[in-house]
Structures are given as C-alpha cells and as structure tokens.
Image (cartoon, rainbow, N blue to C red; front, side):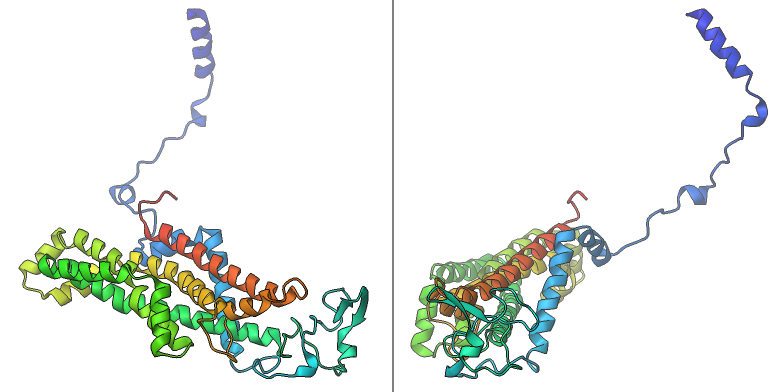
Length: 348
C-alpha cells in the first residue's frame, strides 16, 4: 500500500510547474452579483407558462378560434340564416377534392350519387361542411354558433369578475356579522339548481341569450365569491395589511391596492375554469331546447339539430361536436397551465 502511494506521488512530482495556473480570486462585487435577471410576478409567471407546451398550444389554438369568430362576423361563405329548400341535407364538398365524403356524393339506395348534380347546384356553389335540413350552410352556422358560445362564456367570466370578486372581497374584508349574512345568502343561492333557475327565467323572458345570461347571473359567480373570500380572510391578517390599516388607509384602498393584486392569480385561474363551464351550460340548455332561439345558432343548438339525423347524416353533428370539444379542452389545459404558472411553490 505504501509502495503504491509512493509511486503515485512520484508521478505527480513529474508534472512540470508550468502546467499549473493559479485561480483568480473573485472580487466582492462578482461574488454578490445576481446571475439571473430580476423578474416581477407577471414576468416570472410567463416564464413558467412558456415551459408548459400544452398550455401554450391551447393559448394559440384559442386565439385562432377567437380571431376566426370575429372575422366571420363580417365575412362568411354563405348567410348562416338563409334557407334554401332546394339544397337541403347536401353532403360536404371541397373544390378539387375527389374523396368520398368530401366530394358532394352520398350513398342513396345502395348507389353513390352526386347530390349536388341531383339538386341542380351551380358548379361554383359548394358547401364545405354541407347543409342542414333547411338548406342552410353548416360552416357559416358553425362560425355563428362558436361566436355566440364564446360571447356567452365571456359574459360569464365578466360576471365572475364583477359580482364574484366584489362580493368575496366585501365579505372577507368586513367579516363579523356582515360576512355571516352574506355567506348565508350564498348558501341559499347555491342550493337552487341551475336548471330550475333557467326554467324560472323562461317564465319571465323568452328563450335566448338574455335568459341564459340571467340564469348565469344568479348562481355561476358563487364559486368565485367563495374563493375570493377565503383568500381575503387569509391575507387580511398579514403584516402589510395591518400596517396599512394602522396608517389609516380605507378598507376600499386596502382591498384594491393590497389584497386584490395578491389574489389576482387565483382569480384568473378560476375565471379560466368558469369559461368552459359556461360554454357547456349554454350547450346543454340549447340541446334540450331552452337556449338560443332560432334562426340564431350556438354549438349546443347545432348538436341538437345534428343528433336527430346522426345515423343517416353524421356530418351534421361531427363538426360542432369537434369544435365544442376542442374549445373546452383548450380552456381547461390553459387554466391548468395558468394555475401552475401563478403558483410560485410549484416545482419547475
């Protein structure tokens, strides 16, 4: 053992001194320098969100859907409400595509025929997603339905912000008897099913966007109010809030200057989760005939019309079903990504 150590030591001694370079000592400034850039809360959240590929993909996809919905308010292939009984139930047709199911042909009586030629449709007229039972262009109606569903979802999100956040802040910040009374009111409202509220709204209003919004205004913001109240109760005893109270700041200023910015992440995440819930709620109501009133269209109404002939004309239901699924999955994935991005304790 000692012999091997001596041989190793001789090998080390054979290395010339020129091969060694002294390390430079870092100065105090270099040792205390911050290696990473300084980021605020939003910048750090965006950095976390960019690492979530599913959330970024969902964000881009939803942005495309929103842009298309806005553009098609002014430009559509056909009038979404125009009826033409001569062109009822035409199959999809894409110019230049000769694939069964997309070339305007359909099987009738065991034989494949050109439905466009049978209906005397001009050569320059085609319907990419076909037509419905009243001869209306399904693609144009899909654009309209997506737009109306997104509008209802946006209004639901606004209700969450204005009603839910305000109610939760007041309840949590004031506390005491005020908080007790306000929470009992929430318990009463949450005990009433949404469908019952919707039916009661139909007694007063006609079916349509206004009745759906009125039903959402009654109950859909309750979950947001409870979450905001819980966060407010958690933060109002923090040192910076107590210091602001000691300095004489009003409760309104404390709520909007100190508490609201610190719970903004929770509010945004909850709002993103409420949007697909509102879309599904509208689709469900339209599907059972309590939603949008014809000739307007929504995704739920298109599904309701399409399922009636699904066994014979499946294309009338597939398109709105796919769009509804994509929009809801996109919002849920984006909400999951935002939840992780706004939580600084999440492991990257």
